[in-house]
Length: 464
Image (cartoon, rainbow, N blue to C red; front, top):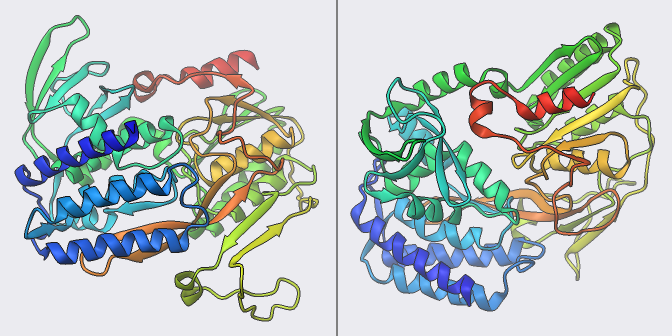
């Protein structure tokens, strides 16, 4: 009951902001009938493609929520793309699968390419509050101060709306993703481009209001990169101690496979040369990618027989089969799916390929709420095989999860939908609905980290 009530409240708020806000992308609209057609198409494809859509929510809850959407869409003659996103994204997010989503990436890129401006703040979204983590201007508010409202929208409403469009089982990941993309979600939900009138509370309790001009997306990224340094790099190797190596890996993106392998080869050659005894791999900002890359990394840090997953279940629905072909892994002949469309692949342990510059010292893995997808899978692998020590916070991604995204577009609005069509069981062969639990818990402080002080890394180095 509470879930349905909160969802209806969210939809009511969305209706209000949809009427009042003025989206700043192309103003084409679609009719109410077309919007309802998109909604129905969306739900049909969610049920058709996903291997277990109702693993968290029940179908009865979804039906009630969907009826609320139809009622809302019938209340207007036409809807813009942004307005439709604001209505449908919470519905997709309500299934709590981090790999199943409604996306505005293309629309935001269009906005950015055409000079769109965003709020010049980095914001920590946590426990119902909005805390300034970094200010990319010389004005107030300062890091650590609480945002009370932005352009008349109070912090509680912004928090609720923002977290409602991000689907995941772990709220820590939802908040971390909202924090990382705060300016994008603020634009998507309210169309704000500046100036930004910000009411905030100083650390001594005084309430102030300041007006900030919006900055271009390119300028935002440039200033953010300068402030965060290596945290914005794909990968980095450093040596914070005489016998300690720090390998920061912020992505396992499959399109960077060649560059990644070259970086790993060079890094472990240098690690061996320096006779490193303690290696730290930092995955706290890693949102995932391809297991081909994480498997390649594994061969350098452990010689233990491994399996990335104990089991992989694949649902070959008609939409998936129209774009993907199944091959027999032995004969490589095409396979036709008949009857049960969920194919279960069980994996045995295998020896990792030998490598010339393998590391055989003490391994530590840093994880946190933004450790997701393949990065969480790698953490589960190290944890389950006892190949290293997990340090930091529970991963945002689940150790056993749904994934491998099948993408499609809604027929009228063109909004992009991503839907999981596989299920991955962690190497140890169980699913407890959790992320990877650290062996040593060390909580991060976003404000101090944005200011250059990494208390988690500092704490681990002290332990070493």
